[in-house]
Image (cartoon, rainbow, N blue to C red; front, side, top):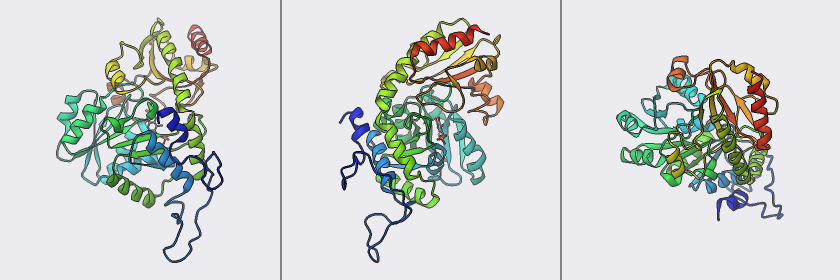
Length: 379
Ligand SMILES: *Cc1c(COP(=O)(O)O)cnc(C)c1O
């Protein structure tokens, strides 16, 4: 099946018993057992729930993995994956990962002596040079948030395999519609399903897909032991969102290409970060490893402009956290998504104070340009 069909019919398609085309919401905590050790495959909803299972099979199918797991948020998913490691282990981390990923490692896992090193993973030699005996995994985001740096997933996976390390990819920005890390050699794929997979800014969820039975067993054990599961209603809502992913992503990207070009030609814009621009560093790798360029654009306004004034002038584009919804969202990484990262590191990696990040929605593209144009004009 092609991905457009799989998004709709993958996992557990509908309900066998009644023929319902929509998976029922099994709003239950427990299940009747027929006798000692006799049950219908379910005992308790932390351990297993049919609605959550339908979602878990669906994400596994569309990421071409071995199995999937659903969590209460992207951070719960990331935390579960990080508990695969032990005290004394070290993880190589892309140097402008999602702020929350940095924070959980720097402020929570640090207390358990799980170490990490921030590396520019777009430079393969940097990654190779950072591998020491205690390194157990390479954790990447590509494109990164918010600077859209591209890392070659295949090359990273090859280095990881050679050194017996796990390759973990946060695929939130691309979604499996555009990029399938497991097919490129990754072991674990993570999603903040709050973003494009849900797609409507109405739920918080996280997903993990693994490529083999051993990782599947270990992560299911962690999921049941630590308990950060996704509830039945949000599992259903997420299945509903995923069904339209292909049409949404196509429109998101069409709009993003148009807006990136507009920003790139605007004299008040200092710099545009969008992998769909041929001038973007990593454009060629992106073209090779993904089916598209996504719809997140970051840009730096000239320093004569007060960026807060610009945000306040926007009418159609919502100023707020998050991304990946049908509505366009603008945010200020330095004070919002990446505030947890120390100022010096932010400057070093390029998350400057006049940087804005736009998650391009699926509104009419001329309306979006009109909003940006009038906001810039009023400055
Ligand atoms: C939002 C986000 C997360 C965290 O997910 P939540 O659902 O907010 O917990 C992780 N990674 C990336 C790339 C994100 O954008």
